[in-house]
Length: 459
Image (cartoon, rainbow, N blue to C red; front, side, top):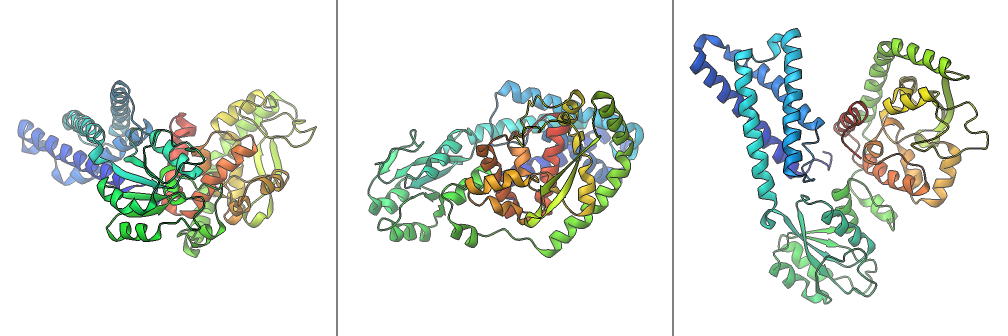
């Protein structure tokens, strides 16, 4: 299971789903009471409530109402919920006309919309109130003061609804606080670790000691572990918190022994089969659009319709990548350069193609051929790969899977145009490779749809 689905998120979703069903039952039985027993066929309830729940959850997802780790002002939240309900009404109106057996009949739909809106609104107000109380947050103690500890402190403090609260830091701060300025120093004496952890009611201990030789409080940490307190390494917790693997100071032994990075043969065969079938079908369906795009490119600027370039794929094997040309023909007359978000080499039509991602459609050919998948790290040019492998640790590990049209890095990080951006994207790519699964791919595709088609959602 993808680590993005925390126990809190799953519990939140299941409670909300139960409220949907309860609201549907309450509305139906209220409608039968007021309208008569012959007004509704209860045998259709299951199909009706499933379609209703799917539409409503998609609406909530579209308006970022399942990002429960981020707290927004009450007015903004209320507006989003009203907008989600409005979008739900559009879905229901569409399907009521074309597939009426999939949705509740009109007398009941008004009951259900009102009841479920009130239930969901009340539940989310209660949840927001609940998570503002410290006793419902997990209490964390950090042991050590490495730079990773600072990143963890910044990550938790930057999310008002993270579900975590740092009670303090154990250890000396001789080299500064490394970003932990707002954290309380509990004690520099590691021999008091166990007693302080009990006194502070700590639920989890994060070990973040840059230099462990001769200082590592193994006995105290073992006592905490035996007492039921979760003990984790800093990089493991950071990965869970941020959805990426921190490559700075990462030890090769961690990559070797950490769970994950499994690529079962069945998963690879499934991705290949589904990719080929969907890519073939999509090419047929997109043929009219591709013809219009090709015509627009030829009218807008001189040059070929397609942009064909050598890229590196799985195991650094080269292949020819196909895209619609979005730049002028002499874009790299002075040699390869990083592409930027507002690149002045982009043509007028190319600007539209990039914003809508229509320039990516020809990559369906690469998916059909087996060079790429729908989801994976972006394929890069050898010129930049040779440079980045020298400057970024573990950069070559991104080539252990097929590249993709979209990926975890693309939906979590903005356009990259530097070595530092490439390192940040690598951290997301390694996370994707570690937790690679069809479920994770589906999540990324849904995020991509939200970001690309609607211009909403992930960073």
